[in-house]
Amino acid sequence: MEQKYFKIIDGKKQYPVSIDTILCCEARKVRTIVYTVDGKAYLHDRNIGTMLKDSGYDPRLIRAHKSIVVNIRQVEYIETTKHGIFAILKLSRRVPVSRRNYDEIEKLLFGICRSL
Figure 1 (tube, helix red, strand yellow):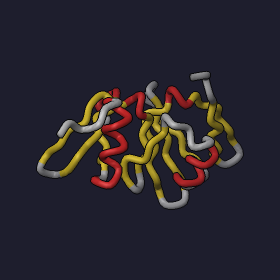
Figure 2 (cartoon, helix red, strand yellow):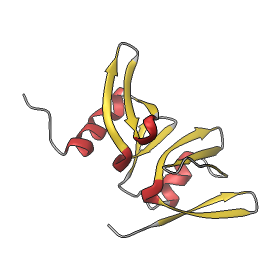
Figure 3 (cartoon, helix red, strand yellow):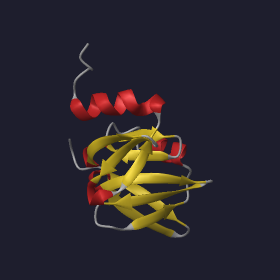
Figure 4 (cartoon, one colour):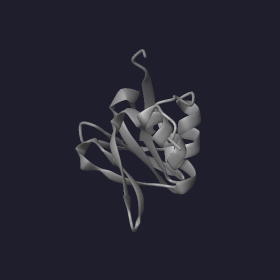
């Protein structure tokens, strides 16, 4: 897949960020925090739904939860605990995965369907 950049708008500043370097995105009311693999965090002036639309619904960016989008290429493994399901990302970042989105993430991550 070609290198694709996403424009993050923070007030009057605009940052080009490679989609490959996006770790995850977290909704904060009408804004979104974009975390990258180099440890940076950008505050984007758009909500998470608009951000996905602006990315052209890039297949690497997947909703893990209502307020969380992950880059599927940055997921190291899925962890199930008594407190829920979590995606463990690079840099040991742990984000919740809703039951509703679990099957899609599992399918993309493992590339297989559950065996019967």
